[in-house]
Length: 325
Image (cartoon, rainbow, N blue to C red; front, side, top):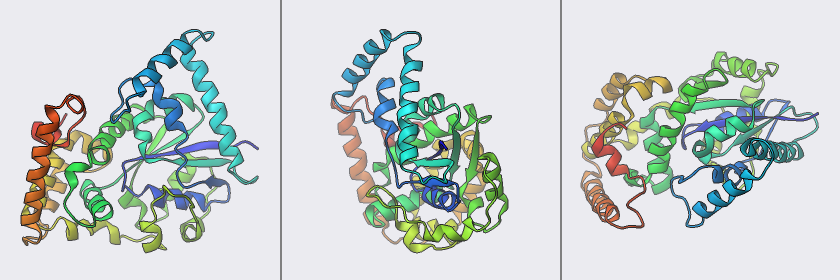
């Protein structure tokens, strides 16, 4: 029996590991920590991806020349070959009882269009989370609570700039989810996921996921260690991190960059998030240090903007200063 792929497409810190583990608790679903196998295979089809290496333009051009000599549509031939390779690897990584394989890889937002074009039989889960929670979770995980948010352009900006319009483009072929709906303990959203994936409903998966062991260097173990059951506790934890005026101002600009339309696609309301941000803690803890870090970050971006090596790359500060793009 061959397996069909399920792709979880989300920004980092959006709860994708929880979703992956619950799905993996289903008797017909297999997975591994973070495969990443499609990124090197499909990214050369794109020209000028963010953070591209020095050799990437050469690889892109060389692949284009090669595809031009293939019979028919070279890109379709290439996608078919990638699909065959990936499906074979997914199959080999799955037990005999599996009919589905979950591929959850954070940077797949960079190649989302090619993934969906390559796997016409695939299932695609777009997962979003309250952006204030994503900012706070990134700060806590990556920098131990220090306010280094401007460094996370790929996680906070590029990922959503890629995924939000993609979830709209492929709405007829995908399912859009909110993290907050998944952690309530209510079976309804999980039943909807099972129905979309054409899997029989197994209520025990909401309990068995605590025993799922995702081995690998790349997987996120934070929630695995902290939560053994579905819990709403993470929903409001952002308030502990966004705890002073400097952080609130930065997050207000971030919400403005996201904008009402983009947030609506994600399942959130701009006015409501702004109101919640306004009620966050009014203390000044870490404010002086945060202000100093933001000033240094801004100067660094100004220097990069005038350096040939960096001038063409995306900038968190440019996004914040110019508003929504």
